[in-house]
Length: 289
Ligand SMILES: Nc1ncnc2c1ncn2[C@@H]1O[C@H](COP(=O)(O)OP(=O)(O)O)[C@@H](O)[C@H]1O
Ligand SMILES: [Mg+2]
Image (cartoon, rainbow, N blue to C red; front, side, top):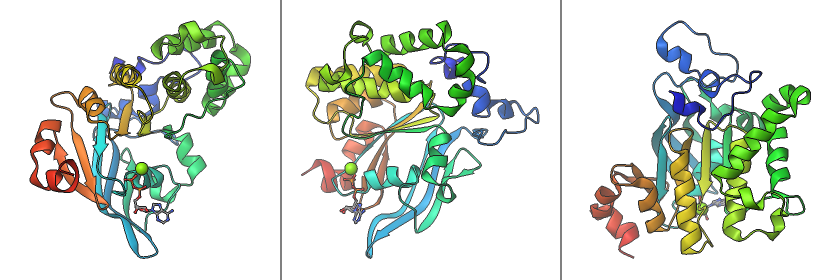
């Protein structure tokens, strides 16, 4: 399970991610989960069952059931209005489900938690538009993101030093902005801003990253750079990526990665990209258009 530490420079005051997310309990050593710790003893990071959300009688989500494995990179596709963004709103606590179960790991009942409390469980969300601090240098954007993580902040006052800096530099390299570190974020290209925002989310050591159409508005080259970044994160944090760009999805899902197709608020099909592409219902409702 060392992959879970891949993004984290060893900082003694912070429990390693595998401890925070309760991997110790996998060993069956009777490890008691600390408050807020995520129990992934069954290998599932996110579990939705029969989730229903209605807006004025219209069912944006209709008995949606899906689960994501720890470390998985799940692509979700589907026509506009399928409920993909609403699903992310439910997971992050922005929208309350009318019915159904929403769990992070085995024990954290997201349907009963407030948005800020859910944010503290380590669910990071990337919206479509980049939201970076335009008037601050790239480097400082990452520093600010790190400081908004309470777990870091407590330990940081004593040691905003070499180790924190090393982590920022490591993230800069990962998002391939090491040569842009001192530029203002506002001067970056769209693709670079999107990568910076993902870097900012990574500074908070997310247990689950939700990315809603991250490649929208990107050039083909930027899209493939983003795919490369997300592929590098594979295994170290669990991700759910909603996207329309099929080349991007293909680059993320590979041959065996599971793709979920949503339509009318439910899962229409699930399987490898090739499987779902051949699915009659998928062709009819989405691809065939
Ligand atoms: N806050 C809201 N109030 C009313 N209707 C909404 C709201 N949010 C989403 N919807 C509707 O729910 C459906 C699903 O929307 P959405 O989740 O944005 O789909 P997707 O992201 O798959 O395109 C759409 O028909 C949309 O108009
Ligand atoms: Mg959407």
